[in-house]
Length: 174
Image (cartoon, rainbow, N blue to C red; front, side):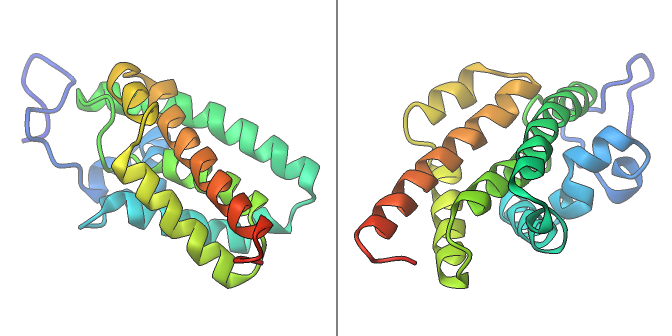
């Protein structure tokens, strides 16, 4: 059963499904157009969806417009993740992957376009997002709203970009 009789919050242990996700624009976006429903590792599937969206749409834009898209996508993510998390009674449900998508777009924007560099950036981003080294773990635990959902992935993107920059600087990635 999706909802309790006296509440609009799904019952404890509710597992979102395509029918539920695709009934609402915020849920569709928060769940990465359905990629967050894939198992196992919905964050990895969401990041892969982000990579595909980057390739087919975002990367073709001029840099100024990419910056605008990133800023607007972050703001949209704060709203859709907050709203969807509140609906679910789980502020940072693993199926909400818009945060991975937007953060990985930032990584791809600032990473060399060679496929090898992008693969390294993907692995680094997923590792930092999963392990959550400080201060990522702190923000993940203490910010439980849409901004918090988005922010810890932005920090994972920054960590990834720092490592990519070092690898590029030392000629190990190009």
